[in-house]
Image (cartoon, rainbow, N blue to C red; front, side, top):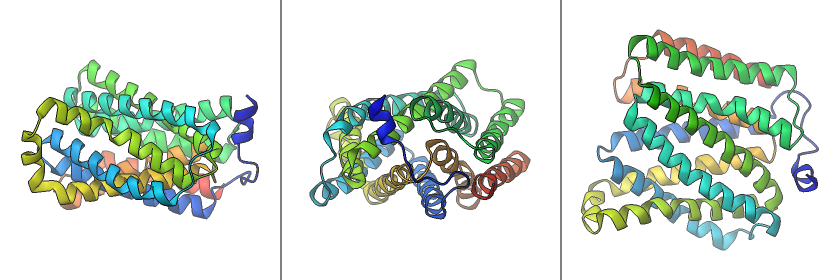
Length: 296
């Protein structure tokens, strides 16, 4: 517990989210929604997940040569995070295969902030203020509404919802693990580089073992936009990790889930999807939650 206590942030504001943390996390949310939109746009999902991970790995490599190596106490957390991220990718693809994106994705992302709040309080002693807790609850409520509305109009199988909840628990687990690991690393950039490299080499390796050389031919038409998506994924999670060294884990976890609203806007503007009443309500709830955490 001494290591966990040492990893906690001592100069964090007692109430309200620092402006730099707010901006960094919201930019990360927009980048996260953008690379997910790229993955959604690529019809071949095996190609999509492979090329995005390859792009992220390529972007992470140069960071290893300019960043300090993470301190020894962080490596156990980093290795655990790699395993959790691989499991997360598997569960996410399973939930997408079993259910609709509009229901499984919000449920997965909406589960995470509440669980992170509990884990951060237990492991790091991060007791949220009334405003912070209210903000987390508002954001999670807005995202949960998307799921409930979707169930009302287009019910998903229980297995799909179960996979989505499991995905959310995995997000909460790696968010907490990385929040501790990056603080112990004493090199945020180094932690980002090694995490992205080790995490994102696994899925392409498995894809090429399974599909062989034919996968290269399928990748070629979309490799450029796929690599761009990979760069966005590294930048998005890198900003989140940096924010976790400056703000409370629960705040960062909740703020970054505004990516769902950014994704809904992208879907409306680029994919001509209907924004709808549920998304308007969710947008208002998420905006209110962000304002509550930042101002209260």
